[in-house]
Length: 254
Ligand SMILES: NC(=O)c1ccc[n+]([C@@H]2O[C@H](COP(=O)([O-])OP(=O)(O)OC[C@H]3O[C@@H](n4cnc5c(N)ncnc54)[C@H](OP(=O)(O)O)[C@@H]3O)[C@@H](O)[C@H]2O)c1
Image (cartoon, rainbow, N blue to C red):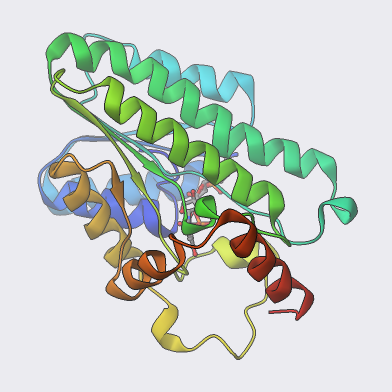
């Protein structure tokens, strides 16, 4: 489970531990992972392994790949949740931060999924849950790289879901809308007053939908009724209309 030190990942880890699932928790912040692990071991009598790794680095990704490949300690559920965004027009942004975003949001998801699948397929059971975003369904001016990374996650997971048919293993992407976590602050994104409370989901609501969707073997999960409706209304729009609409909201500073 990556990105377990905060937000949606923390909520997923808590739900899994409460169900009695042993965990390997991955993120950069060792102190936060250690604190989470101690609390979950204490509360739920589960084993929680801490694996501090920076998924923006080759060494960090390799450490998690090696753990996933360990046939003596099989992992039956991989949750690729670690991720971050940046805010601003691409022309103004530091390209190194955009590059890191691709490493964490794209490359780590690809490599960890690839490392987990052979053991799962061999055992005839398992699930991969990739946390994407509704931003993966549209071009997202003002956070272009982020939307593009999440589009990759949606497409990869859909394709792998189909490839896995009949194996007993499933791949599910989760497409949350606005969720109150550290994400916005880390992305240097300041939500304006126009965003009503009703649009915000809690990390636990997203975690519950993600785990339910994975248990049901679904290809895609959009948490929350309002976001399901929004997705249903906007999906049939032609790609050009969606691009223009998102471009307009950016120009209006929304
Ligand atoms: N919040 C939203 O509105 C929203 C909406 C749609 C999708 N999402 C997606 O949901 C996922 C979880 O985000 P969140 O909202 O829970 O945000 P968050 O509270 O900022 O959590 C992000 C997690 O990712 C980890 N992470 C970031 N960079 C990392 C790196 N280089 N190596 C390893 N771990 C790294 C962080 O841990 P460390 O800092 O300890 O490394 C943290 O545990 C992300 O993929 C995000 O894109 C969020």
